[in-house]
Length: 442
Image (cartoon, rainbow, N blue to C red):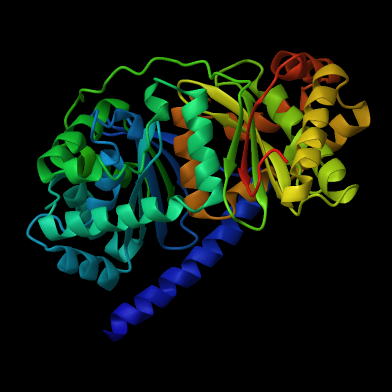
């Protein structure tokens, strides 16, 4: 037990230390990303760093919650919660106890388009940590008690969302934007669908999604390429070569609807959405810079200045780009006093219109580029963040040299680029607007 406690303390110290060290090396452009291919053909991107005996692994598979079969909404989300509920000859309690004893962390999650996994381990427990990950993916127990417990937790979440203004707004927004498309469905399940989720359904979904043909892996830490290649085959080699994913069509969001929901809460929540860009669109980087000026910069954006600073309408307001695999969105959000909700909406709309018709100044563009390039290293202040970025780059097909080229792409954005993409996304466009609060529209 003393060894276990000491190991956990070392693990926590390592997490802090490796973050500082890797952040510094990224900032100094010293990180080298290696492409590692195992004998079995499994590929991973590796940032090797032996400063601290810690290894962080992130990976993804194509096929997220959009792959839930009809009537089984929530199945993929349930799968992500159930994979570590016992594996091989270990019950859920035994499996989790073993992870704790080894100071190993294994986790799974899913979004609309992909299924994700993570592993964190110290090097002394490396081989067993990878073996436990293999067991979770290939020999999960899916015990009935665990499944029912997770389903009950998901149902409680659904109940809570019924009185949460942001959840209500989000559901109304998705239903309006993606009516009839799989993106409209509730990824966390519904009261009607959860009883339909079974052990057999989970195992079938696991076999459909966890396959080698769409696997992307990012690894950071104290492991060399040869050792990683061997572990890739041991960990992922027994997965099926190909799955049986449903083909998902691209979708153009339907924008322009005004939706008001009544809820007795202290503030009115506001969501606005326009069509955005997918990550592979040539205009994505200019749109990214434009968004920072419009509402992505916390204390410097137009939205912050006009909605909060000048008028005091809200504590928090902002915009973001949401690139999905089959569509893209440009979103704005805020919350405000119910009696000032219409005013807040009008001011937010004015900023969208101004960006689409006038655009920023050269000074504003230069300031945005300085911030976006200067703060880039903050995305890499831990090994886990870097491993996540490595997987994200592979998913977006951005190239293994993107860490080195990203800032130059931002620097190359001109005022003409910003104005072009702003007109494309904002000029003469009416967003979908959802408000949730007391007496909406008053």
